[in-house]
Amino acid sequence: MSKMLSQRLSNRRLLVDLLALMFGLGAWIGVNGVYVQLPLIVHVAPEGWSLPAHMVMLVQFANLGPILYTLYIKYSAWAYDKYIIYALLAAGACACIALAFLYDYTSIVFGKEHSTALLSLMFITALIGCTSSVLFMPYMRNYREIYLVSYLVGEGLSGFIPSAVALIQGVGGNPGCINVTKPGSSHLEFVPAESTPRFSSLIFFIFIGTLLCLSFLSFLCLNVLPIARGERVKLPSSMEMLPTDTTAPPSYKTNSGWKMPKYTYYYLLVMMAVVCFLSNGTLPSIQSYSCLPYGSIAYHLTVTLASIAGPLAMSLGFFVKTPEVKFLNILTAAILILSGFVLYLAAKSPYPPLQDSWVGEMLVVLVWITLCGLIGFVKMGITTLYRPDPGRGLYYTGVATQIGSLIGAITTFGLVNYAKVFQSYSPCAHLAEN
Image 1 (tube, rainbow, N blue to C red):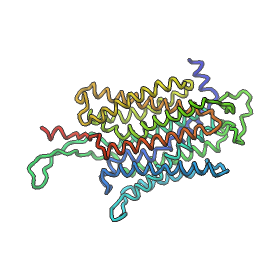
Image 2 (image 1 turned 60 degrees about the vertical axis):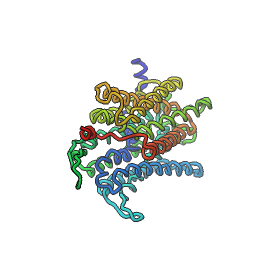
Image 3 (image 1 turned 30 degrees about the vertical axis):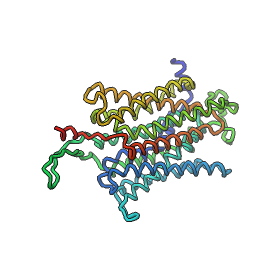
Image 4 (image 1 turned 60 degrees about the horizontal axis):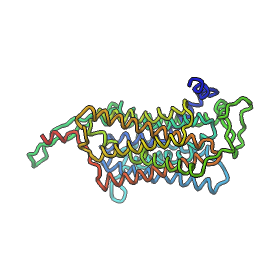
């Protein structure tokens, strides 16, 4: 084990690992940053709690980015991926910093007041996230395989870091209950009273914008620093030179004779789409329904620990061999079973089983952590299987990711907002009943 570990970690540059991680961090951190600020933003937005519905559809419209990029690579003979990434990361950094000052700016559209600045700037950040699946990740094929894992860990952290900072900020904290009596009524009601955050959304968005600036600089360093350029590989369609060191490890080279059975090739793409259908489209939308009935502590632990479980599972790619398809089949089956259990809990909201028991709290937290960890590992496993492909394996992996996420988001949006399958939990409801 120690010998294999030393081989996996040999002839690598930790600085390049850090640069790849920071590059991956910039993929979705803008969109995730806006989402975790929702409990504060909805109080000043004219859309109120219908704002998330507008945001979900904006993220789906941002799939215009992958579509345009697909047309670009099909009809253009010039490869300017590097410059497109520069433009996207710079636009994302500017958008997040602008959000800090304009998120509460509104204007009249079609006779109604809307959060035009917030929605417009969020669309830019969503454009980066959606396009990253077909552009950022395939670009890492220019570097040794081990750095693709670093990128994936960074992409996973783009969800954890905003959530952790929002928890420190006090967003979504345990609300108190106050009693109110409506005018003309003697009926006493209890409503949640949100606590004041430790710092404002302005500071939060400046922090996210700063991280995006660092992501831009990290990508710049990947392309210009000699230590990073020395970790690049020669691709069949590239003019990049291999390292002159004849003892360079195999990961410096791509196998032009790489083969994968056609059935397996498409099967893994479907598997990636199914996993992303759940992880990016369905599970985030029903997380609060499945966790909040067990209490704020269970919900906060789930948000924090589950969002770090994915990156930690992906980081196993540093230490273990690329998983086999049979093993990924077993893990995917476990993901489907656990997802079904989570959906069952969400459908039973606001009164799920074991609601007032520590067993229920512990169970829901452990299930979410395990589920997110398995999803992260399967994503890493599928991606690394396509890494040696001298063709467009990583590009098609990104396409599968976006298609699965799109279908999952639209399906869950309909179930939540129109079919009313899931019922919200109110922490003050039991007081009103007494």
